[in-house]
Length: 144
Image 1 (cartoon, one colour):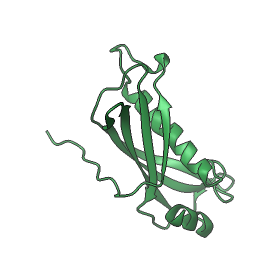
Image 2: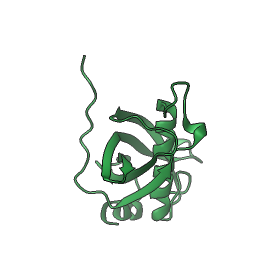
Image 3: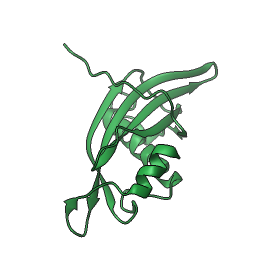
Image 4: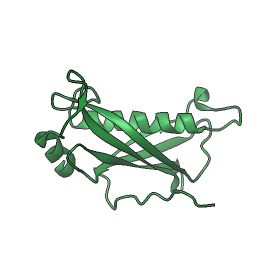
């Protein structure tokens, strides 16, 4: 069976740390796929806020996540703290990809717990249609 392999960019210029809560656990006693996706959603929001954006306020337009790929590497449990690094790449006319490196913080270093990629499309909520990525946003995300 073929497995998904996400090739992460070489450099990330943003990260956040998030602690796993008791409510993040599934019936198996660990973080499930729905919470894994929620963790990267939180990291994405914090990443955008670094640049003064939200998903509904992106240089006068919005963003929509059009796809998500998750690659699991290590189980996450209650009390674990993860470092989620985020970067934007693969820009095109209508959007870009966000890449996520999810690492479990341990006393002896970081261990990759997962990788993810989300496709983000620029969207004009007033006109109800896709739109081009604003130049100012493009510059900020590409060059910091």
